[in-house]
Image (tube, rainbow, N blue to C red; front, side, top):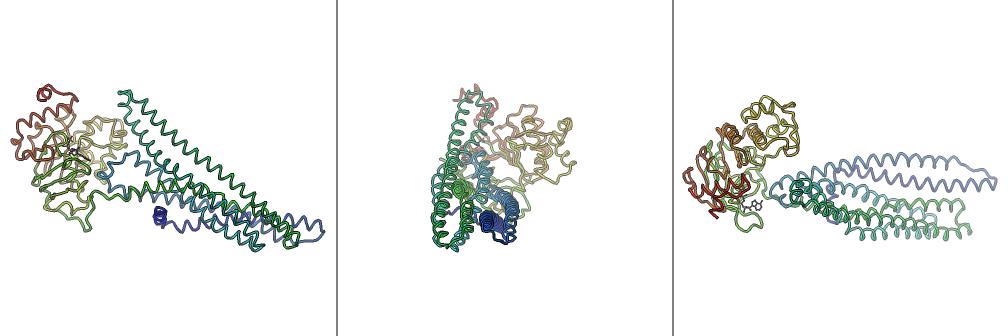
Length: 588
Ligand SMILES: Nc1ncnc2c1ncn2[C@@H]1O[C@H](COP(=O)(O)OP(=O)(O)OP(=O)(O)O)[C@@H](O)[C@H]1O
């Protein structure tokens, strides 16, 4: 129920919409019941007057019937309009609210979630919350208002009739929903979880199709998806069948209520306590009034699914970011030298520290390289410098300022990154470049691409800069993607440049071209390069050699020990070819 209160607080900006929507729905229902009751009274009274041969005023009841019919039609239209508008606004704002909470968690805290699971939370779980408003809150409030009025109406005719009506209202509107909720809770929770797992499995299956095919595992993946689908369908079928049962039970309650009313009211007619037309009116009133409680069993069934969805959303929203922004404004550094001072850091639940006691000073405008075997902690130092994680000990400074004093966004404004895993969005080349600087004019884009040695290639494409690169840039080669990343970094024009294996996996000629482009990019910036290859180190001023998170050596290139250089060359060759080289097999 805690979730319900938190959601109610989130719904605050839309409360006036909700109040109007609920009033419109109540008015529609009351108009419908009035229409039925007045029609019952009118027809019977007219028949009785006809038989008795007396005149009666039919203008007032006829006007009441017409008025009710008009209110019912207009009310239904207004209710749909208001409630849909409120729902769409609510869903849109919930998506923004969720995304705003998601963003500070990237990348550190989101690594435990699969992208399919996150997608499921953003889409289906938020959509499930629209049920909470339209199918749960509105019917419950409408039922409360109308059942109170209906019972009062019956009471004015006879307290006994009110007691009988209330009993059946409570049976259909409270007992059945409680039963429905207890049956719907477990499948509701499972549906929320299974929808997410199914989405994750389908995304995995599509993205890893090549691997699954090569290793003959497509059948197993299909079987897994099949099992999940069946479980999901079984739970949905159970909810649907419960819904059918409760609707039938509401119908039975309506009939029983009518029989009870007739059983109690006929003697009252005989004794003259009630008129004949009143009996007809009360009978039709009873039949129509159960429309107020009919949606409640489903509302309570959906409540389980909506609360499960809310829990999954709050689960992420309540996660503390790995790094919090400082309360005050970020410093404005006047120079851009970098200093790592005795940095130590362990990933959560990791066995050994990823880096320990690391020291490195990179004067402004100079170039440093971090070298080390796989898993030695090179990328971790980048992650710490970018404030994706905070060090457990030590301080990182830029221009003398502790980076903990910067907000993440302000800090990253000073840093451009070119990595081996350049993410290209499924958009045009131009859009992919403008990410770095949305205001950049076409001339600046072309100039950056010329420096990155990719302009001629783009210009030859039939659609030039408007060429669509495909999902994750599949229509470009690795080298072309890397050059787009260099052009992006040039457009960002940041004083600090981080290069993470920018030439990894490229052939010698492409690597040479890219190195020329990178050399232009590095000029005048403070550069930190991660590499496995000692061969590319001739253009850096200093090197830090890491081994299992600790400093092995530091100084100019000559400090890279010969043995280490050989080891690195072997590792690089292995990574490039995916095979063990003769040198590696000798050494092992
Ligand atoms: N997000 C993470 N969560 C938990 N442990 C991690 C994470 N990233 C890295 N590690 C661990 O921290 C250690 C250092 O990893 P890091 O990625 O910094 O190495 P690296 O030198 O950059 O390796 P590579 O050259 O293969 O990229 C490794 O033992 C790795 O398993």
